[in-house]
Length: 239
Image 1: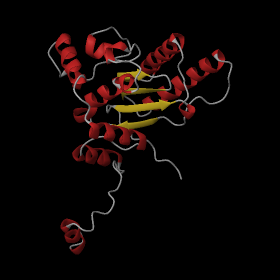
Image 2 (image 1 turned 135 degrees about the vertical axis):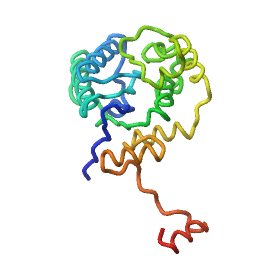
Image 3 (image 1 turned 90 degrees about the horizontal axis):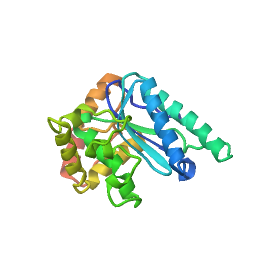
């Protein structure tokens, strides 16, 4: 069965995940992490993408980025993937594929999900048990977004800039948000949309994307609860 094309609209952010083949490690030491970091920066500049959040994990990486061309994200991922595989295979005397397959991505509503996805990405090291606090992990955007650390990869999104009038106010507000308990339902929705390549947003936003791209933004709803009065009424009136 042919795969549907990914949702892409210039100016709309995307959450992207790329995993190692069979969930195996793709990053072992600082040389690997620095190489990946540098290639991401070069690709973002070359293909006109703004990177708002990221995390480089031992066996996968997440990006939150806004492309300004139709093929910006695809070109960026192709560029990074190609150069990193060359680096990895040469360094570790191996050959063959490194990646699980095609990268996974979801186009998202920045108003409702930009910051939620950013926090979700940066919490990965804590979620995986690698560190106890986001600030302890070196290879993510948390330092830039919450602590004001210099990170040439990170370009603040307008939703981030709305957190406060100055840089320190924004960092404090962002750090405070990051300490709030995770919304389990929202995390599930982020994962589902990314893994299944559907749009991440509320109904009004999804309707807008459907109109722009002339294709369904969400999976079809399955039949309702046949025992419910609402379901029986809908069936009887052909709604």
